[in-house]
Length: 405
Image (cartoon, rainbow, N blue to C red; front, side):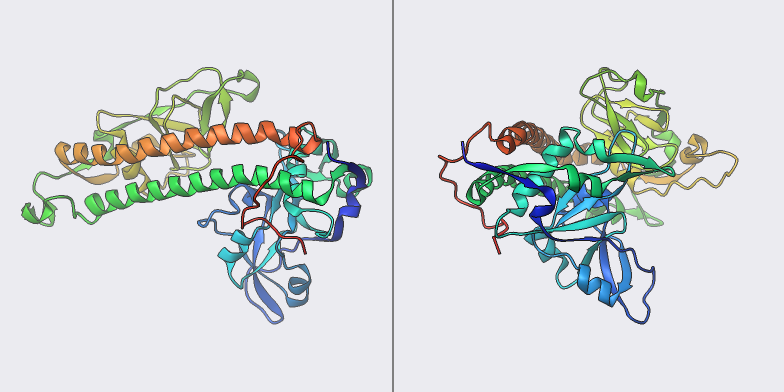
């Protein structure tokens, strides 16, 4: 086992500064900056991720601009189920995506800048992940005036880490980063498959350039065999069922609300695949579940004789607005009244056959990703604690790893 030394957390740092929020519009002495919030951490390295754009005092922006290897640390915004103290690593891939844009952490975060001559940023990031996963960060989480906050000063004072030599840190970081790279690659492939399916839908059913469209006659712009129908003629929006947090039992069945997956349960309400539509809160949101699932009472699920592979794109293309202020959320009656141009069954069948291949590929990638995450999360505490030694391993470091300064 490699030699480890006890290091107070504060000794890892060269610098640490609070975040900014700035102004919502340009002004004299202000510069544009993309802001990272705790809610952005999970998708930070996604090329599709859009960060809030704010305008910050140019002196503060220059002093607090994030650099390669910085760690953004969440200081506030936790919930009853999710403590503060999450973290995100600023990688080369992230900075390359932003180009010359100044990036800062938001006011409910702070950045940590490490002494990279002694401590590998990726390794320290994984240490913070391990501490968070073990519930250690929750010890420093307090509720203050309705907002959950992290006691950073107390954390820094009381946290002492056992740090291996730098070469060992880099080996451990390389192993764990390899899993993260595979997960990120799978996510990029999933995103590409989703875009391909979306493009096919738009080409066929929005631009009406479906296979053989050149040979189909039209009446007032409507292709022969198509019809104008109401959404209520095509599908049924069924109510989800109330399921309080305390009533959920340990299991792997995803529980859906209007904002997506909100937890898991031991039993399902609807067989998969299926469609969830937001009823209250995130009104009109549309989610696809490949597996059996449990929609709660803030959401609808869809029943229909029409292909769900077609309907999920149809629903995502619709603008559900409730004009009846007396009825909170999405009214089924109003949703059903939406008119749509409905294609013939044969075309829907052809579309389903084409995109189901893409959905199946997405499912395989998602299953692979779940296995990768489980394996990484199992390795993480063993590698960080030193129970699993890496000293004898000859590891080739990937190009994306942060280099020591």
